[in-house]
Length: 538
Image (tube, rainbow, N blue to C red; front, top):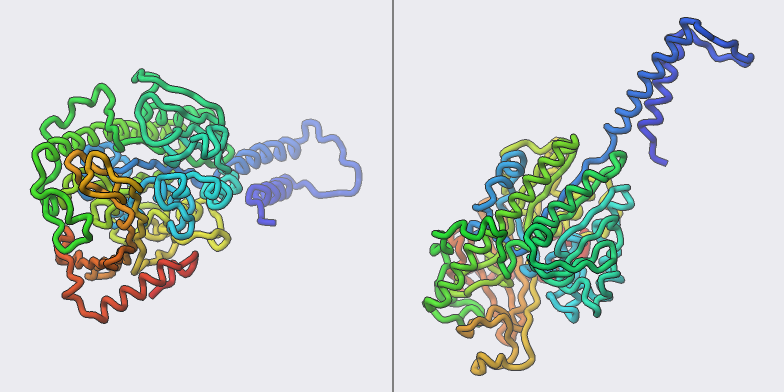
């Protein structure tokens, strides 16, 4: 049994109080002390004892944790620009990670990695479909039972979830709204994919339908308001964990009424790889029209502006949560994480809008953290993955990480070295399983079957053989990415991001063959790694 600090405090102070009063233990029946000064001294000291013990209990209560998860928010193309409050309240008050990555650039597998701390090849969620294990019965019977909230619940955390969970959650084939994943005390989950109005929630297992009233239904605000109520109603004796999963800035990009005219003069960035031909890249990157037609440019500029508009409500939510934590005297004992499930692109390599690709714009994510032991205004270059969020949160909770089966590692030591020794990661894996349709898109008959996410100009963002695995090396001055595609070409892409940060040139034919061989071997090891072996590859 672990020692109870509060009990030890009480016993110690009791002994001190009695000894100072001159009281001695006796086997005889004690006489009534009445108005004896000794009795008054004992009572006074016991009052002090009670106060000290309450404070002792409070001092050992684990830190609270809030995880705010955006949907499809890039950092590479300025996605954090509209979030001025978040950058001040979290970034300036804590740490901003500039090398934060998702291990797979798609919603459901990425979110599954965040929840489990595992690479996709270990949680086996491959895409956003039920057949790809998104919220499937296989997921529910396996990885979901070993997910983050399960362990936090065992650590006596009060747990609260609101917003988008997994893309197929709540569908009849996925168990319906009555399914509440284990570990959650309060459950307010969106059925299906991101929406802002006209959606259905599972509220603690019961269906709750919403319409198109901004005051009552706008999902980002609803998530914020219900989280504030949870904080008001919580038990102060136990720590809490909130996961707030906003739909923004995912399509359909519906901004709150007060923000729909913001950023009217903003357009998608035209630098870097914008509207560049996908020279020497996988065939999917070679098929877009280049240069892009005006119709595509207009479409992606509108999308870029609207994404920023939706993020203003998320910025408000962050401010509301921080203010509430401050008002209930919990801010100084709370870690707040802000991140996204994946990045996004708007016109890079002439691809209109989407994610799913192996390039920086799709795999880099924002990550800002504030909390106890984290010095303000830190910009950290350590590589951090979304599979590291769960072990870091569990590390904060006090759980022994050797007791959990996770591929990620805690980065608490990176942002709070006074609390933990920092561990580094020289290599990591990015993996993605492409999706396509068995039949030809009727709007694009010349393209044939096997593709998906095709836009009006017949530019397709995904395909069955857009299946790849990459090993990324960020160490010192070296920043290399080596990727292999599972197609009939066995296509390989290699980039030196130190000299080519926009990944314009595939240098596979220029690199020393021994380097390619080394990267290939590391990739093979990472693709089959589990737990500790994912962290020990050299």
